[in-house]
Length: 246
Image (spheres, rainbow, N blue to C red):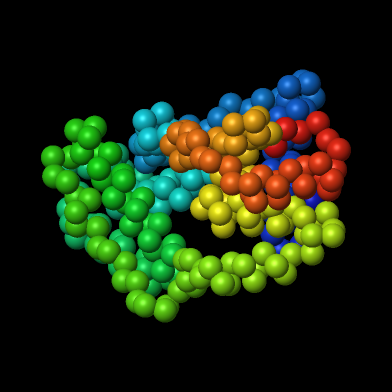
C-alpha cells in the first residue's frame, strides 16, 4: 500500500489515503490484518488529545474543523517544550508572540488567522482547566487585514443574479449547481451546511428547511418558493437514482 501511495513523488492523490484507511479497517474487522497496538503518546500528544476531546465534547466542533486547531496547537507545544513534560505555568506572552511572528512569515494571511484563533482557544482552555493562572489569550496578536488585499467575502446582488443566469439548467449538472447556488444565495448557507442537508430536512408542506449549524445546533429557516422550486426540479428530474438521503 505504501508503494502504491508513493508511486508519484511530489503528487498527492487526495482521495486515496482515506480509501486505503477504510480498506484497512475492513480487513482488520475480517481478521485478515492484525490490529497493531497504538504507539505510546508523548507528553505533548497527551495534552493535545485532551484538548481535542474538549473541542468535540464541550465545544461541539466537527471532525472537519479539528485539524485547524490541533495542528497549530501541537506545533506550538512541540516547539516550546520539545520532549519535556509541558509546564504551562511557565508560559509567558513572549512565547506566544514569538511563535505567531515566526509562523506568520511563512503562512498566508488566511492560515495565520486560523493559527491565532487556535492559539486563543487553547490558551483559554488552559485557563479554564486551571493549567495557567494568567489569561494569555489576550496577548495573541491580531492579523492585519488590509482593504482589497483578499477575495471579497460577499458578492453584490447583480453579480449573484448573473452567476445564477449562467447555469445551464437543461443539463443535470447545471440544474444541480443552480439549486446549490440558490440555497447559498437566498438562505445564506455555508457550503458545509448545504452538503449536510438530507431529504428529511425539507418540510415541503410547511415550507421550512432544517439546517445543521456549527456546534451541533439546528436552525429552522423558511423555504422561499424559488429555492424550493430549484431544489424540487433537481430532485424530481435530474438527480440520479440512489439510496442516499443526502
